[in-house]
Length: 314
Image 1 (cartoon, rainbow, N blue to C red):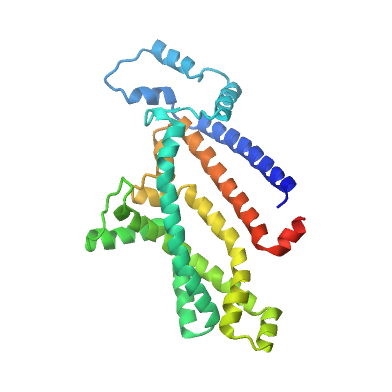
Image 2: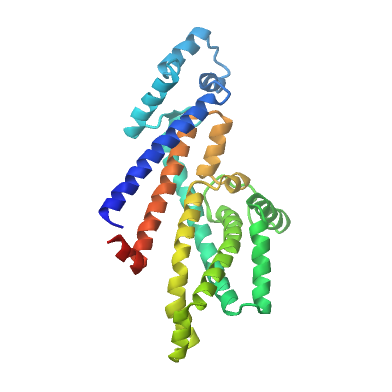
């Protein structure tokens, strides 16, 4: 990827972020509920007059026309200030930084588990295609991709938490014990999908002419598989892995809710429930930024790993 292409992609990211921020701001403002009254609702022992409510609304800038409210928010956001969360009583940026490590940990652990399972199974299924174990693996992956994350999570909680009592049922904090079940929930479903992708990619490469040429030159099957086929087969999977990791970093909200994992997804759902508009806006913008940056990194690494794309870029 040339410098010109990189600058173009960064410009695209800026424009997309502006569009997302505006659309999110519109949806947040159209949502039912009054953020000022929600803030006051947290202090039930304090009697607040209508004049004080209007004064607080003026202080927060909520009495301005919609477009001016958006421009005020955008100006603060460009300076790194995403507002103040009345749900957790701290700046939005601080709360995002507090929840991000938990999401990164869960995403990384799930991706590692997925790779450990899917890559060997996909390769073996491709090499032993149309055999008994190939059909068995394909059947398991078909079931795996059909299972919703929340159902998988509930079944794991029921088995390992309620019946076997090996792992805690209620999470709420970052620990190794609390990490196991959400990692398995995300990793198993992802592994089912990626096993099929790895199998398909390896089979496509095994049917290429260069494989037949390598066999004609007397190369061993293991050399052809590990030195010739796998490097080419893994390239298309880099993009898929990047997209999946972007989704995980964006917050696997359903899984985080099921296991009370204190990540971005859990925080997003809680902020919507409590009508914390500033926090909702900040989370959506943060998730979009991470997703696009990861895609940019994946595209850049793809061009570095594939000489053909690197040559085309020049």
